[in-house]
Amino acid sequence: ATAKAENPSARLTLVIASDMVDEVSLTLPRRLSGIDSQGVCQIAAQDAGDADDYSSVNVVIVGARNSKVNVKTLDQVQAYWTCYLNQIGITNVTEQSDLSGF
Image (cartoon, rainbow, N blue to C red):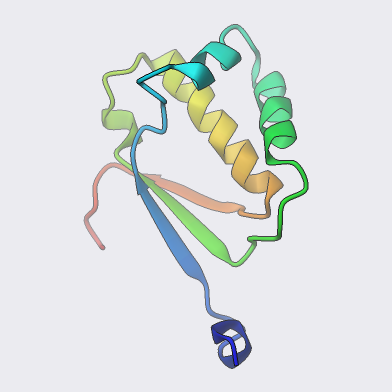
């Protein structure tokens, strides 16, 4: 039996401690540069495609706002990842400044 069959209401929490900006090649920030929030979501939806349903997953993004990356870039990247996660069924996405509580 699978864990989901044994406990159907169980949820997995994925904790990401990152600003989620690719700082090596800056590919994502370059792709999002100059695009409004609707355009950012369209790109994220295209990138996600028709993925499996991950609606039983919660995501917590930790420390993203502690980044030295400029605020506009952070906002665009966060919008991209929120839309991407929503596209694959993950709608419970929260941000926190540190790992307290884990």
